[in-house]
Amino acid sequence: MARSARRNTLVASAALSLLVGGLGASAAHAGTGTDLYVDDTAATCSDSGPGSAAQPFCQLQPAADAATAGTTVHVARGVDYAPVTIRSVGTADAPVTFAGGANSADGPSVRAADGTTSAVSFAGARYVTMSGFTARAVGVPTLVVTGSEHIDVDSSNLMSSVTTDSTRPTVTVDGASSALSFTRLGVPQVSGRAFDIAPGAQDVTLADDSISTTDAGSGVFAAGTDGLVMAGDTIATHCRSAISLTGGTSGSVENTVVAEIALNLACASTGAGKIVVDADSAPKVTADYNAVNPSPGGSDYSWSGTAYSTAAALQAATGQGAHDLDQTDVTLPTLATALTEHSPLIDSGDATAPGELATDRSGRPRVDDPLVADTGNGGGHYDRGSVEFQDPLRISGL
Image (cartoon, rainbow, N blue to C red; front, side, top):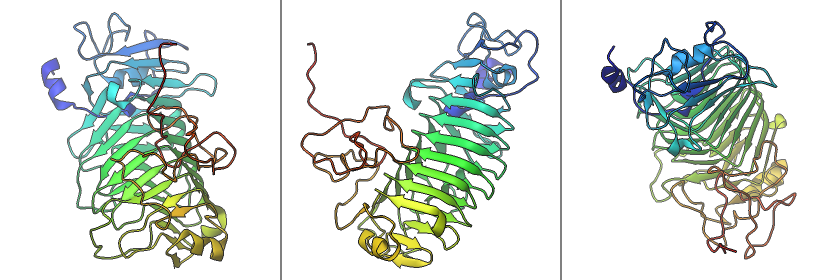
């Protein structure tokens, strides 16, 4: 296929696609601690070449197939790459790394436009890190993880097309995968489910992610997941659940902001609550230092089958959410709205929350706001949600 035709078939999204994999590397590409390069704009690129800086691969798949423990795959920005299936196997001391941009805005993209192929798939991969990409798919999940362990996806955007299937996920994790982290991700305009985590999955972390949905979309669904950790996420939905933990799921939800994207638009059905924890999961889940606004006419929580309209009601009945905020404390911003001075979300998080990161969704550090009292736990001046409020006045040049 001509390179111009090839570029037209690829487009745009994925940070993740760089996570390539495969044992089966040829002798020309094999080795530990090597650097591989992907750049479809390079005049010298070749998918049968060495993947060097002088002659990079044109597409991600050859790099994924060539990568071995310790390999770093450098992917050029500003290019739309074809879908990739990553089977790479690294080790704890020598992971396989797919490096895009410093963040998703600076990085390359991976697009799957045929309606049958996901943009990025991890299949039997081990110890793989991917960061700085945008991935997009049409009609199918954008990112799929099957039978994989120790996968880290960071600082990327995951995009999905509008769907009439309210259960179709943007990210799906099967029950044979474990030790996964999805951090500092943007998952916007979800019309199905943002994350769908199957029974049997273990040790899954979502931290400092920003998720927003359409009217039909919902947030994170985990059924029978052992060790789901959510920390510092911001999830905005309309009339649907932002978090649903069922089937004996265990884990924690802390420092997370759950917002309603259309407070003035009535719901056809109030649903089960913004945060749902069923009877099988309730004894195994800890929730605290969150902030929740319900849908119009709906409830903040559904805990073990009982609806609670405020954090105080949940705490009195279950002991959960002792430090949660709700609509009686603050009208939560949607994802498009930055924190403003004096917000109760500022400096009120739990710095010791499981899974919490040292920087926010955009990689900005935790900072103290001297105009807001520190009401959180553990020091560190952590804000709730995926955005850390920054001091707008800074002295430079000293």
